[in-house]
Image (cartoon, rainbow, N blue to C red):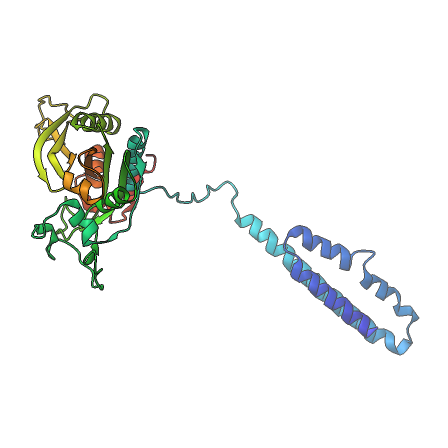
Length: 346
């Protein structure tokens, strides 16, 4: 009998560990304390025992029954207290939802506009060598950009053929690699991070993002470049956008130009209050461009007598600042959710 009671108690405790709700606790009560429960069958066997054994056996049965009752009652009370403390009408905690960073969204928007024009996307590494970053782009050896105070050079063994390694200061090296590996016609854009040792302030950062592009074919001219950039300006800023080209100098293009877009805020019209975007100038500088220098084409084994092309480059941060009226470039990198959440629906 004692072994049977011990087995019953072990079975009961095992079932208690698995019971987790009021329904389970009620099931335990029926199974172990109900009319047809095994413990009641043990009580019915008491009259069949020797008179000297009945008292001790009855006490053990009562102790076990009381123990079972206490455990089951405790489980029922715990569940009831939990349900009473749980307010099912109380609003839940809304989980925070992530989204693309505003710079990622703007980069994708820019690339999408150019891809619709037929450009393909080519991304390169952020560590480059001097040949791809400077030499192939027609930078002379004494150009200021090659100085250590103007470029992040890396403490690595230099390439015997291509010079020192550095953090690229523009995405043009990606374009050089495409030109060296492919034959015209081709139209490519290269988005990505670039690095320059600029002092950080409201409009400068040592790390920022660019999207540069080029197209090469037999009959491409400056008019094609104007058409491509005007279509971009209308798609990114406003449908009535106008462009202004000003002569400039870049080592890798000739002729070269700075491009201004008509102010999408005031459209060049004088108002009572000064325009916060263009400062009443009517124009906003947005990018640089030009016809690819023949030296660049020849360096990449492209016949400059047969082919010509155009190139352009723009800063993603500047585009985002102009489009959304952001006055400080540092806001993009501080991870302040109050700032970033404004662009969740872009």
